[in-house]
Length: 155
Image (cartoon, rainbow, N blue to C red; front, side, top):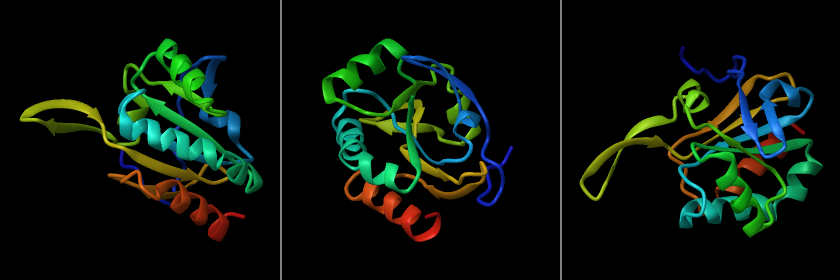
């Protein structure tokens, strides 16, 4: 399956700390679906805290933030508690959502190759249509860029 802007976003159901979450549960809201490699790492913590700090602004444009990584729910709960994150983190341990959104990639770090999540964000409109994708995200300024996109195009 090829992911295309302008087409329905791939649906999935993943566990979160308060039970299973379906992407379709958020129909009627704009969705900021962000995939990140790992809880408690520097880049991922900065990104999560940026989303936290802009959470109110996203709510003002009828947008819900959903973070997805391969970490288990128990690790997500510690991450949420440690940083006061006001949004859901979904556990994609089998990387089914990551594969559906084509962010499960071969990565290289210090000469080692492994499969992992390529930091990416997807904006899905109220009707469940994928309207914007940000791939190979650089954390600095990204949250503001995603928010501005929603303000300019979906508000």
